[in-house]
Length: 452
Ligand code: TRP
View 1 (cartoon, helix red, strand yellow):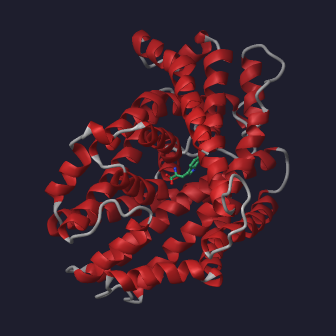
View 2 (tube, rainbow, N blue to C red):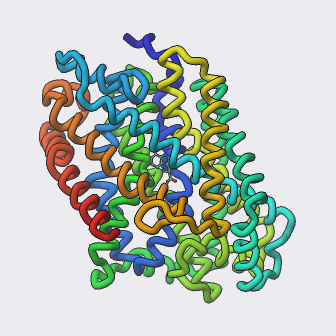
């Protein structure tokens, strides 16, 4: 059984944790979460987001990893293997595996563009561009990047090359080797930055902004955003955790602990990123509700004027690039894993897909550069992709995972799998996967669709 997967296995559960945390920690934590918290008024949004992670994110992650770890195949065949373990011939839900691969291709196409921005910003930081920069100049640099498709493509291609290269090398020589270096580097950089931001910034204001809830600021919209983001930030609903789960050594028994660590790491990184950004923003008269430009416009201005800002700006954007890289890797692996286990060469699929995804990304580049053509519901190319994936496909992926594990996997096998938790915890977990998570996901989907 164990040897059936062609891709191989991670050398240890610790590597699995690093890889899964590397997938989870990405642009979602450092770029999206802080600006969403800023736009949605801080405290109450943050609390609700934490609740979503704990009550829904963790059980759904357990369920997704179960399918991979039990199924031991790519994102499609794992569903069949799970059905077989329940005595059925095949799964009715294996089509979801194709949705996973399609969605991962679509998401990576624009994730690669934003990943490219982070490399471009690292480059500009090294060149000293942000030193003494004014807010207007900073806005002009970001605007200049968006308006220049060739520049965006250059850095997008660079980012994609880094992702594809790692994937061609395989699970051990590629993903494992990269992750075991890049994640420790990431944590050290994050620690340096956080200490720095606490010392030169306004940590008290940042703390009270992030943690004192004003529930009048919480509405259906911000709640839906928080729930959707909980999925995105934990890399759920795309098959990434499923596929990494298939590479986790079989002997790992304490899956709950593994999942808790991954969720904790992801959450701590998001909170640290938020605290450090707001600590700098509040100390320098910036605007917390600046939206998506918070990272690429507000922060460079601050770095340009504070002590040690030159070095710090390099560290900051390199940190983002590293985080985006390990997330991009996990997205590409979803489809490559399926094809490799069907006997198709990893090298060929990695390069072929890489080229295809990069070309597809040109559509998003064009959208950022002002291509107005509408595709769906009056949205441009990028917004259409973002909407179809983040708002529709990921929640549906999460829903199907809950249905498969909640309703087609027997209590007996699932309990055996989660052998280390108490009966009560198991019952709660089971209840969440069967009822609570699906209902909330349907609520989310309904809300998002009603808004369009
Ligand atoms: N979690 C990553 C982030 O926060 C993005 C990501 C990687 C992702 N793999 C995923 C999102 C799978 C959804 C599904 O940036």
